[in-house]
Image (tube, rainbow, N blue to C red):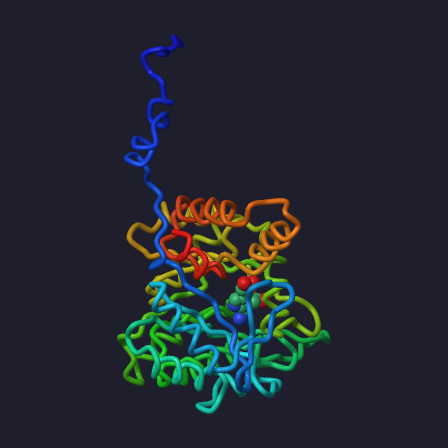
Length: 332
Ligand code: PBG
């Protein structure tokens, strides 16, 4: 092959800052960021989450202040996770109008109205005493499994509680088969046909959720989540099937989670499903690693975060759930 140099010099596109700016393609914007927040019982509480410096378990009054800040920073939204007063075998708190999330959503919506998108996570691991994402059933050969179809019934109850409390977007994360379908028909039946669903469609059984489980007090008391969350070693095409199914069942947006170790999946889904809004969850472990290295002075937090979020966006995500949402809005 004959060389085209010196006629072609790609450095001409990056030699001058003004030219670099002109040809830039991936631009980050706070209105695409969703801030995860943890809400717990009490008053005036901002309980630091040790494994996630800068993140807190908040009582409702403090949560409302965060939500107001999210409005003033122009964030795309918040997603709420609840730590209830009491846990039981089925996660009753999650299905009660008096439960942690129902109360939190009502208070936040009262304060911010339609100025902030309030999303809720639909799952049971934070509400069950065993820490699994649904209802357990004894297996014939001993041990327990999460019973898919019973969990679906409860998921609809949880969704209706969130919808009536005023949630703007529901995000089922339990990885049960058929979850989007039952939610869509359950919501439609009760007059919520306008309420969109962002499905955690391709959610992997990941070690990067470790710090979140401290934050949400949701570690499984036995076993792991590998019989419902996706296997990282499975064919990448399984993620396509998960996304395809959720879209057919009525999902309006799909999520891929975690983000950074699964950028190939983000790109695969982006190329395959034109026009579908794709979210990626920049999860707790991804946050904690950077925080820990930055605390030691080993990396530049801001630069690393901007680069990581650029990568997630370039891979094809339209929406990013990230614990840095507020910082990003200030940096940009
Ligand atoms: C389930 C849920 C989890 C996360 C979001 N929703 C935990 C899990 O599946 O174990 C993890 C998010 C993170 O690590 O930041 N309710």
